[in-house]
Amino acid sequence: MDDQEIVDRISALAAEEQSLEEAHIGEGLSARERERLRALEVTLDQLWDTLRQRRAKRHAGRDPDEVHPRSTDTVEGYQQ
Image (cartoon, rainbow, N blue to C red):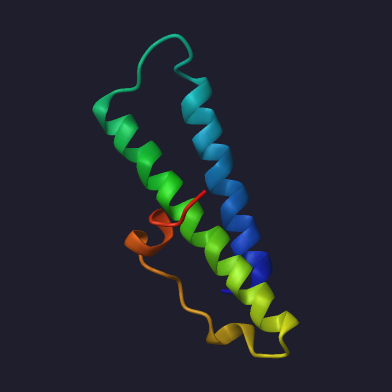
């Protein structure tokens, strides 16, 4: 996936996340919806991490295609 494909995927998933959250303002999400929301959050974290890695490689004069998505445990373990 190139940078633009990653950005497009981030945009689509972020829109789905927002839509899911806005559809249930004032009422809770179902268990299935909470699970989907969590999956969206994790996938978005992985995509942002991959995009940052690609940009760093490019900035360092290296091939951004060498980047591989990091595991869920890795990206979810980052300190904010």
